[in-house]
Amino acid sequence: MSTPSTPKLLIVEDHPISRRVLQDMLISLGHYPDMVENGRQAVRTTDKVDYDLILMDIQMPEMNGIEATKIIRERAGPQGKVPIVAVTAFSTSEYEDLCAEVGMNGFLVKPIDRDELHRIVQQQLDNNQSDEKLDGAVFDGHILEQMSEVISSDSLSTLIRNSMTDIDRLLEQIASTDINGDLDRIQCAAHELKAVAGQVGANLLSALAAELEAHCTGRPVDSLDKAAQLTDIRDRMIDCRDNTIEAIKTGFPSDHSLPKAASNL
Image (cartoon, rainbow, N blue to C red):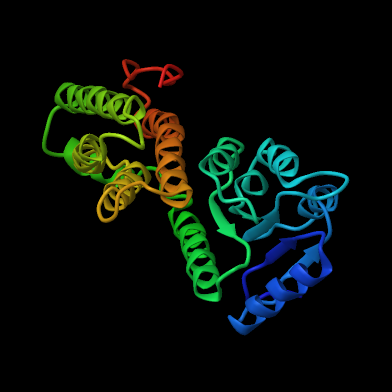
């Protein structure tokens, strides 16, 4: 069982030997996971406990891992965003695509390699912790307040409007580019977005842009793991855009000319 000081992991696996092997591997890595035997139990358990990571078998009785993931992803708040890693004996690209489509964040193939398990568990937990550190940091009003002391209100409003226009343009460029295609285009847009968002105090959006830029470097998108990470960051950036607009409106209520929700992104 997990303790309050350790990440909460859940194993969803119907085969007792596979379940025990995965449990022993995780214990050897310093984790003490909870365990359930099928997707239906996973849905019930995750409704009561906020897990940091779920290792989800795919082929299970009563409810498979695909259906369980769909239900979990429909939930609001942190419960619906918990990282879920597929654990399966099937390693075809079609199977990986199916897992990605329902919102899984990674892919482990049986028999599980301990080093690969360690890598993907640590990666998912690190990503989760980064999100928690960014919570509550959507907008820093001090930056615009300082600007308001040295430029006119009209100039400040123009700066905000132009910045949000640039943000929408760059988000559209990122959203319309194939994750598995032109990474250079995404990286360039993320780099520019990082600076534009930062200049108006949109801290979370700027941080997510920096994270996306970093993920575009290195090895090509040749796995579900990296493609899912890029897609997840991109989606969070688009969600963050509307929160940024509302935060700026709250901090500067006189500026009524800001754009509306970016429902078309």
